[in-house]
Image 1 (spheres, rainbow, N blue to C red):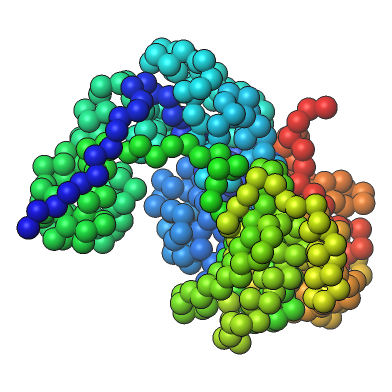
Image 2 (cartoon, one colour):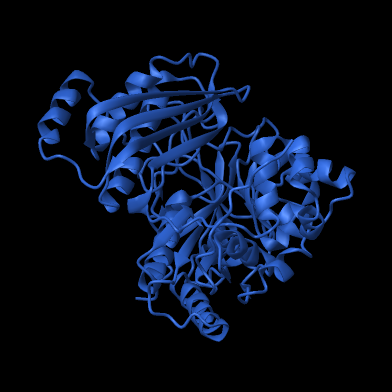
Length: 508
């Protein structure tokens, strides 16, 4: 049997693609905004139940804590001094936007692949693409990122392909820089372990190891026939190309993207249909915002629904005309969700728009209003756009999710007999309302505070939730521009304590 491999035309001879990857971004932002956590292990993610680690600081990684690890396992590995925080996506998004603006000043061709990483194409910028020129540009960019973000660092890989640039950015973390000289791609790639390739996960790695293939150079020595026999036509041929550094994927800007999507993973399976509809509204608004920022509109609206048993269902609807209107996207997403059985609980919810064009038709405004009349969208006040990753503390809950320096003074305030009820809705970033057991958007119900949440006290000022439980909440009063701050404890429903927006790290 004979096989053919698609031959890739080499179009770059210089390290003209950068991969910029912020270092442990979520944890780095938390350490920036919380002086008492600097230099200490920090784990961000779902802090209870089936929660998983989103990001671990480098201090926590020393103990084996990794992203996607169950939080329970992370707690077993990390020392007692580790801080476990719920995500603050508003703070991370603000930091990401600052970085992406900086990248846009380097090149108009930016492909943002996640909140903390992006590719930058230097080929059409007139930049000096010699190794020295790219190195100087990357070093300056790294310094600008650290300054603009208040100390969040980024690692950069520069190479002639996206494959090598991404591998390079990961080699010398944190705050690293790797530039792959032209003509030395294989010399750079082949000594590395096979799991450095994006297409090699744990199962593929184990299969390769059983055959004595441990480095990418070993993989390059395996025939195409053997790889296809081991992994199938598509995966085998892909590994064959990657081992030879054959990657001609272009950097694709938002305007050139084939789809725009957003999704939410919940720490606790969501069964409430009202909650699910509101989450769809928020996701639709995020997608619409990205469409408008890219000057795009789309005809196809799709949803992704993942159940608690990890089975995933997708639904899609294609319209006659494109739209970038979040309300219309939400109406269609709600209609699609009504076709899915959600009674068993939903772990992940996603909304996407595809079949993209460069602009939306003006006459869609009247159509959108008509759709809104048919399918009204409820207000989204009181619902966070971040995952519901906090559950009620167990009966013997430890008051603080972050190790305290010592006994904290308790400041009394009005108390509620319901103060230990299980939170049903997480407190939103900057909503002004933190609640549980109540319909979002109302003032009723006991208060639930999430570890790491930004708060404002009428007398003490700004701070963050160090932990809560047993009807009390402990706050550390500090911020990115202060020294390590004092700790105080209050009743969970103290009227002087309010959720607030993430603090600014910029000196005004």
